Image 1 (cartoon, helix red, strand yellow):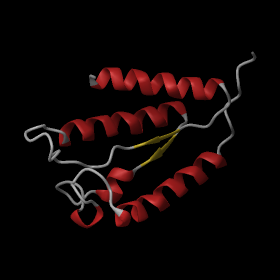
Image 2 (cartoon, helix red, strand yellow; image 1 turned 120 degrees about the vertical axis):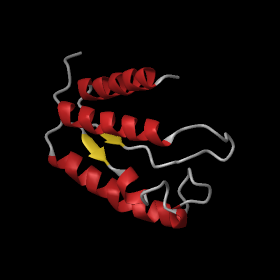
Image 3 (cartoon, one colour; image 1 turned 60 degrees about the vertical axis):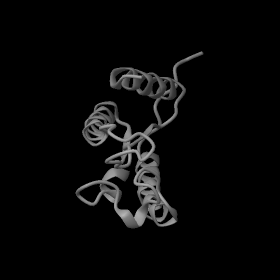
Length: 119
């Protein structure tokens, strides 16, 4: 799946949610400098690019952006104390992500709900 296909899918899901009066929260992709089961797969720059697009798209459409990447990143990749494999959060990682999610939910609920399209 290409980045453009991912973006198109995200836009479709967000548009469908708004059309049904549902607030949208878009979350960043957590940092992952590499995937242990796929050596040589370059992920860091692709994740940064997708997160940049997600943040911009959220701003353009009135969605809320939950920035897990910044909370989990150590300047090189996933902060080692917050992951068990460099890709997935461990218990401590989820503890860091929790407040980010809660803040995004509060921010989203503070905005007016989108007006649902007549059915």
